[in-house]
Length: 218
Image (cartoon, rainbow, N blue to C red; front, side, top):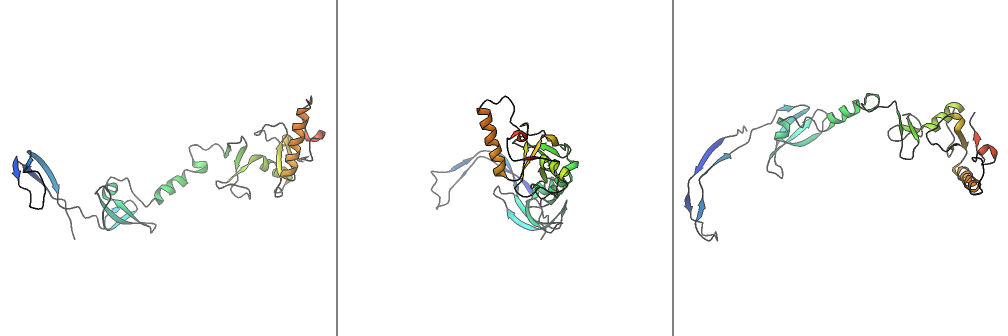
């Protein structure tokens, strides 16, 4: 079925319209002279191709009264799209095209790429390591863990904690890192540090002078 948009100018002169018996209007309705364009039909988009979408069928109107069309994307997914969004080029796929473009701009291709290193909200440095067992959803791992493992030549055992001796979280020099076998040992170490500070120790507490059971990484 081929639909076309037919428009006609309708000129209304001032006149009196008598309401039907079922109407409860107060009297004749006065209409001022004006011109209107009336759309009697819509353009058939069936079979048209817009980007990755091919139009399958008319699917009624949206909440604003605009014609919408059922389309199939090249990826196989079907979506309903407003006709004018297709024609003006705003919608070219089911969303897969946008995902592909964003994926192509991620990682080293991103304009915001900083060499695969960034600082998290706690002040620690994260480094890109997609295949690491501790990597997050975006493929980042705490850099001090990677530094320690590089020296050790193996992954740290589960539960291990790396401590920054000078308290500077982004200082990941190997000489500034101390390895604790568990979080409980790390917590005990910090408790001893707080006790030493409370006693006004003249030296910064350090695991090597009795601050905890951790060990250096060699």
